[in-house]
Image (cartoon, rainbow, N blue to C red; front, side):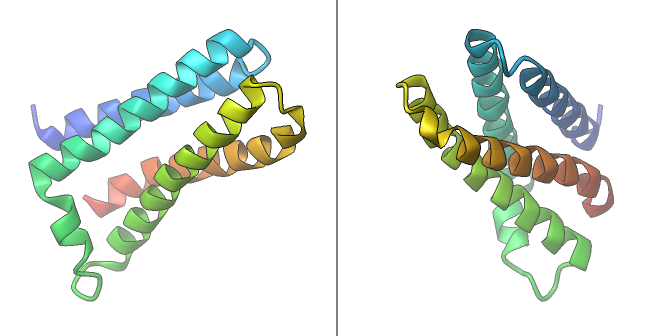
Length: 126
């Protein structure tokens, strides 16, 4: 099986896990476990793609790359950065700082939208 198909299947499963985690957002214990798993798996997927395709070396050649690849890389990078912000705000929420809930929600919605766009653009960027 082609590595592209394996990466796309993993990406679909990660996105499905993220949607399921959002669905369970009111069940804190399950939400945290599912989202932590999805984020970890997504970052591992980025590492797999890097090791398999030398993605970073290709991505830095912005001028030579097709526009869709540049857009895809920017969206994917933004998603990963949002993950770290979500982990930070999520840990604050777990420690009882409920005043940060609205920021966590906004970051979460942004991350889900960007991760969905990453999935969609991945079909055109390969």
